[in-house]
Image (cartoon, rainbow, N blue to C red; front, side):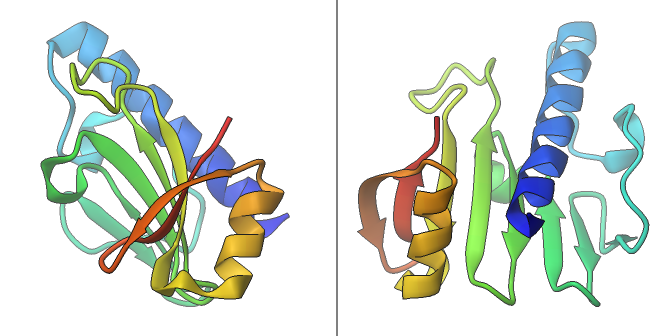
Length: 131
C-alpha cells in the first residue's frame, strides 16, 4: 500500500509537469511553479528535491537532467521513475521501478507493481519497466 501511495504521488507530480509543459513549452525545475499540493511531512530541500525524513521518502523533479520525476523510498531501497511524455527522448512516457542496491526486497516490490525486468547497473540497481 505504501508503494501504491508513492506511485500515485509520483504520477500526480508527472501529470502536473505535463500541464506545465503544455502551458510553457518546458518542464519546471521548481516545485512552486507546479499546481500540486504535496502531502504533509515533505520538506523542500531545494527547488528540485523534497524529503519526508520521518518516512524516509524523497521526490525529485529532474534528477540529473533526465526529464523525469523520481520518488524514492530510502528505507526499502526502491525508486519509482516516471519519464515525462514530451521530453523527446527514447524514454518518453516510460515508467520504471528500480530496486536500488539490488535488494531482494526491492525486486519483490518492483515485481508486485507489475514490473518486468529490464536491466541492472551499479548506480540504479535492478530496473523493471512498469505497465
